[in-house]
Length: 165
Image (tube, rainbow, N blue to C red; front, side, top):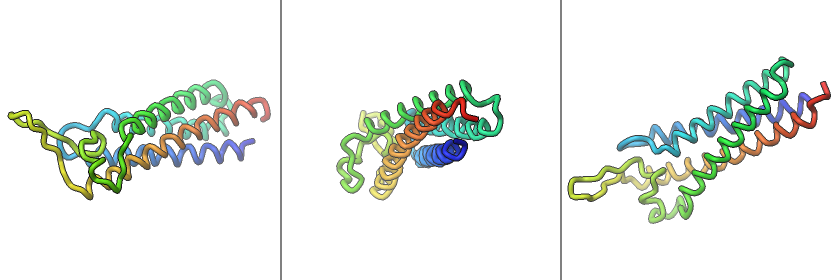
């Protein structure tokens, strides 16, 4: 049982570290204005996932942490990762990283925009920048969903083996 749970926790930790890393990379790539809330929430969900995975690993060796505490953390982590993945998927809907015309104007990908006095909007514009951010955001979305699946997997394994120590 512990081996299966440890493997699930390992993948949960890896996926959520990738989510946090990609979200931070997207945030650091913001050139104009503040980071979109979606990107910040992605980083938050990755952080919660890492916390849940680390406490879950500790719970494998410290019996008092096992059970309801880890179930709540994994449940919150799963919901946060699912929400972040859905938000990113909705925001990226219709984008194709190899088709520049679908990338322009995307809030997550632009790197920031500013409005001039004549109500014209100027965005940070660099084709390589857009494509790189698109690839990162798409990968981030995929890892959010993978992290969600691992959180659910850990919950299932933990529930099934709850009395077998």
